[in-house]
Amino acid sequence: MKKITYGLILATLVSLPAQAEWVLNGDQSALSFVSTKAINVAEVHKFAELSGGVGADGMVRISIDLASVDTSIELRDERMREMLFNTAEYSTAEISAQVDAAELADLSAGQSVDMMVEGILTLHGETRPLMMSVVVARSGDSNLLVMSKKPVVVNAPEFKLAEGVEALRAIAGLPSIGLAVPVSFVLAFDQG
Image 1 (cartoon, rainbow, N blue to C red):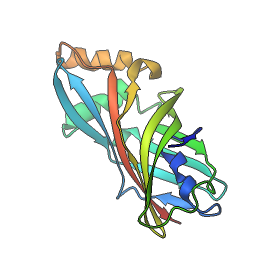
Image 2: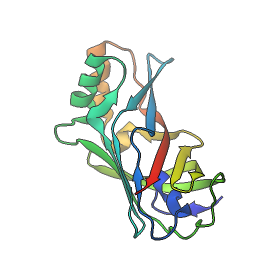
Image 3: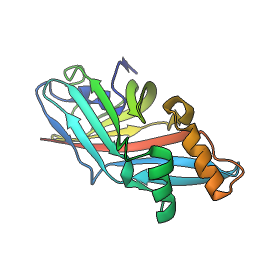
Image 4: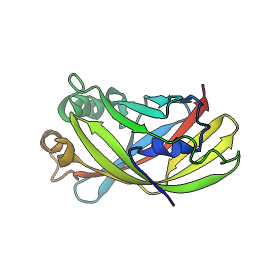
């Protein structure tokens, strides 16, 4: 395994040819998270809108549309947009990285590699590094998959979201909502 600085899931794009531009395929990608309420009730949610890619210079950017949160309950989605994420002020979460695209340029179609990645996440006006264990698979000459090998834990207080979690807990009449949220992803990239 190799450590790559500043590149959440996207640093794994070092397997791409140095001058290639890659576009995130939002229809083929998924980012989900687990919330825990009342101590032992876990539910899986997702964000439906992801966009971004990696430029020829190795600059990677991924944007998560926070208004696209999907918990399968419309009222809860609305409350999360307004009370937790405050999408009127913070509409997206952003992941950015500068990667060395030549480092794994020899990864051929059908091959994969495990990596430890240090990523930078900006959410709710706060920026924090996150370590991730990912698998990068070259699924074809012009396709790449980046998958979380282990969930990434996002701690709500680090992103000033604890107050929003408490507001959701209170309005739903729950005894608790967990502040540590496991996040998993599968990101598909197509050569642009």
